[in-house]
Every structure is written in C-alpha cells, then in structure tokens.
Image (cartoon, rainbow, N blue to C red):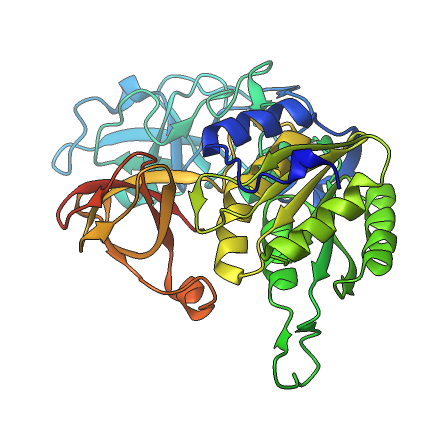
Amino acid sequence: MSEKFTDFFQVKPREAVEKLIEALLSPLEAETVTLTQALDRFSAESISAPSSLPPFSRSTVDGYAVKSQDTFGASEGFPAMLKVSGTITMGSLPERSLKQGEAMAIPTGGALPEGADAVVMVEHTESPDPDFVEIYRPASPLENVVQAGEDIREGNPVLEKGQKIRPQELGLLAALGITRVSVTRKPVVGVISTGNEIVPPETTPLPGQIRDVNRFLLQGLIERNGGETRFIALVPDEEAALKIACEEGLVSCDLLLLSGGSSVGTRDLTLKVLESFPGFELLVHGVAVSPGKPTLLMKVGKKVVFGLPGHPVSTWVIAHLFVTKALMSLLGVSESPALVWERAIVQGNIPSAQGREDFIRAKIAGKGKDKIATPIFSKSGIISSLVAANALIQIPLNSEGVYKGDEVDILMLL
C-alpha cells in the first residue's frame, strides 16, 4: 500500500467533513409519482397553486347566511326578524343572491350566496315560522365565513423545491387537484457488513461471534431519511470477498457504506481493496468526533464510500451526522429534517478532551427553556444506551467538558 495511508488518523473536524460531503454529492434526477406514492418524498421542484382555495366563500358552521348589517343590534329581547328565502345545499352554488332583510339556511361548508357576508350559528336563532328566522345575536362581517382564496391564493407557493412531503402537504395537493408530483429519486444506499466475527441475526453466535447490528441501524436511518437500502453482503475480512461486494455496491448504488473493521489491520484491508479500483481517492482518514473517530470517507470514480466504525454506537453517531448529510445532498435538501438542534440544561458533569467533538447520549425531559439533558454514560458497544437516548449532547471541539447546570447544544434523535 502506498505511503499516503501510513499516517493513521489525520483527523478532520465535523464541519470540514460536512462541507466536503456537500461538494461531493449533487441531487439525483427527478421522477414523477402519484400522491399515494409521494409520502415522505422530497419535492424536485417548486409548485404554485393552480387555483384559489377554497374556490368560493363558505360557511364554517350550520346556521343562516345573512347580511351582517341586518343583524346589528339584535338581542334576545329584541331579535332581528329575517325572511328565509331558501336553503343552500352541499355540493352546489346558491341559485340566487341574498337581498336585504333575507336569510338563507346554510350547512357547514356550504357556499355563501352573493350578497351575504356573515353566517349566524343556528344556536343563536329560532324559527317560529318556516318562512322567517329570529336572530338573537348580531353577526360581524365575515363571522363564521372562510372567504374564497383565504386558504391559498392562485399562484401562491404550495411546495418549495427540496421540501419533504408530509401528510399535510398531500392533503393540500389533493385539495388543489394536483395528483402527480415531481420528486427526487430515492438514493440507493448499499450496505456491506464486514468482520470475521459478524453473523446474521437469525444465526446463533458461537463463542467470539456477534450478530450483525449495524446493518439494521443503518437501514433504519437510511429509510427514515428518504433513501432505499440495498444490503450487499456480510463478508469476512478477506480481500477477494470484500472486493466482489464492493464491485457490486459501486455499480448498483448511489452511495456505499462499509460497516465494521475499527482495527488498523481491517481498515487497511478496506483501503487496499478500494484503492484497487480506478478513480480511488481517500478524502477523510479519521474525524475529530467521539465516538466514531475511525471513519473513512472515500471516492471511487463518481461514487462516495463511507468506512464506518464497527461498534454500533459509533456507527450510529457517525451515520446520523454524516450519512444523513450525504442523503440530503443527494435529495437536494439544504437542511435535514432529521438534524434538529436544540438547547438544554445538562444534569451532570461531562469531562472531555480538547481536539475532539464529543457526542454524549442523553435522555431529554421537559420542554422549551425547561428542557433537561441527563447524560447516559456507556461504552461504544452498549446498544441499549441507544434505545434509552433521545438526543446527543454536543461537547465542542476545544472544550474540556461541561458542568452540571451548564446550557448545552443537543442534537435530537427523532
């Protein structure tokens, strides 16, 4: 192997790695999908409203459409008496306009007749005669009315490019008659698990063996962030087997993750295999992040490859920070909905060392300014600590730690 790999851990800070990922990866091509396929996808273009919503002024209550001026001064002692000139039915527009001194019965969602500017709730009326209604409370202009275009005006933005399509956006698109949307293609992310000691989860491990955890940690993170996982293989620490798996991943995937191999020897094997491919370039050989320092970022041709640590907690932290960032770059998203930073008061002393950025698992309780972060101290192989945590406490790069009661930045684990 060439000498450029002999200096182990020429680490880069997190911000430098993030900028590098942004520069390396561009948004994938767009594809058109139906609304039923669009949930949690990312819009590939900005969309404007083709029409106003609602297209007509409508009532928000059951009652009577009126001219508000005809109800001024009405009270239980002196009700306003109005002539009932018709009943508005759902699904059709009123056939005539409302004249002064008239009212029309209207259901919730019914279209206001021309000339009406308010609706009186049925609870504030009585009908002693089928042809008349008594109004016991004055109505102000536009009371109990949603005006045409009040929800959204024609030409107003509906979706921004790169916006995640949630159930709310699906409902708005459907209301506007938009049944097909352009979304960025899902990035296909290949996952290769490595290590002589790793066995599939359905296998009973022999002494010295452990089940493959990282495959499923990564699959969950990938798919929650808009990607599609392709599990390539679980391979031992053998050059030929690893090269075959990498060849498949580089051909069939947009992004490739190699999980496992924190030891120097195993990492050198990973580098040796990938160096054999044309267009190989080693970009990051260690990150100034704990846990997860032994992380590789490489490029083979136009494909980006991550070499992730073997311990599950380290893998999870690095994937949350950097693989999520890579997915967002491929999806054309400037800010990840999964990377939510907040502030909290730490409930305990946390020592640190200068020159690294620590991410400590934590349990968050409370809300707003009363948010409390209780650190969870455990080794990087303790999987249960991930289940107990709902955030990561960030200890800055050149800090020697924080004290109980300090305010800290936290990265929420959603």
